[in-house]
Image (cartoon, rainbow, N blue to C red; front, side, top):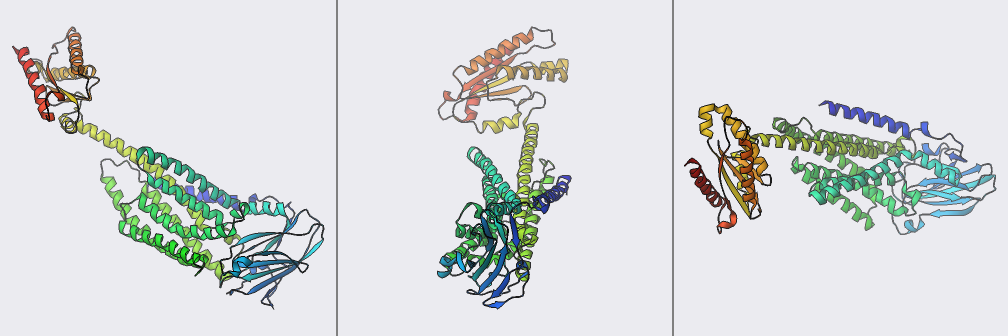
Length: 560
């Protein structure tokens, strides 16, 4: 593991510490609000049978059946406050609230009577102002078999203060969900730009959808949508829909990001994950089985899939990295490491979420520090962070590889003496030339004489001086190359009718100016040019033959 990968766990640990402090009671405002937690002092009965007294959050109801009624009663003594409100949470249960024997609030009967799923909800029940005490009874009728294991503690106080307290305790979830939402918007903008203008990186758009899915699930799981909407049924069901689409999003993201690794397992897992949520949603819509019943099944399948996908992907990435290191374009960056580390983190946090689910089911606890932590949301946050690092270093990796590749190609296709393209590049280039073009065949005169009389060092100097003049004279040419010792070729794409005339005239002028200096050699060149339109259905070689023949005609004149 390189130093960059060592730093990633350190950064994750620091981020975890910041999140723990941010979500802990350290930053909670000292109690100055008008509210109190109603966790003790209740009389609890189950279908008329009294249960042992104690704190509501400690009561384990075990297995409950549809139609069972849990009755809670207490007397609230208080000083007079503005907008007195009773706040409590229910899940999968019908709620009726009585104050002094009068039914003042009901929820969920319309769902229960039709046999439909009763959504979870925080209830804010307004009480009469100006009272010193309230005799409260809350009847909870179970709407699902085995769905309710415990009872949430209630709160009493000013309505505004209760909401402020709720926001304070949910601030970590609000931060994580908001961060994932903004991150999704940024990724979508970047992905849309790259896809529209460069025709690639659709995986970034899908990464944006994955981040948005995680953010939506975080808000739905933590009841944040309850603050802004009365659509309890939609958001409660959408929480499970989002959860069931998490395996789809992760497997599809891996498939789009690294499609050449573990292809067999990726396709099998992707097919399972696509089919599974639609089957579960259909069962819910048809009212055959409600959507919350499959949480443990889906989470278990998800962990098995992540393990299989992670192991197979890990082997594939190790093999690919070995090939990268042996490649001449290797730059020392392995962006895949960050994607693997993100996959490892989402696996660990998914396991923690399943452990929490088992623990809470066994103890019947519905509140507390462990219940408030959604490990899947934290895993999603870390995963998206690793995903960002992957895209960041993947971009650098590709840019560096392209740069190295260009440098290597430059060495392979560049004439080291003149800086012009060499014979191999000329052949490669001319094989792609189409439409209108012009060819100039050039031969440097008296190179052999200079080599024989002044040495090859002076001959090389002569070639280099001539090449420098060619670059200036044929500045508008599309290719200038050296095909042999004293042989050069120039190609114009879509030339004007006088492009070649102007260029060779400039060449003659520059050679004349060069020859006015005191040197051991003088520059002179023979050239001939031809346009593609001079012959019908002629190949590049045919046009080059015409230009080369004209060059030799001039060369014979120079040697006469």
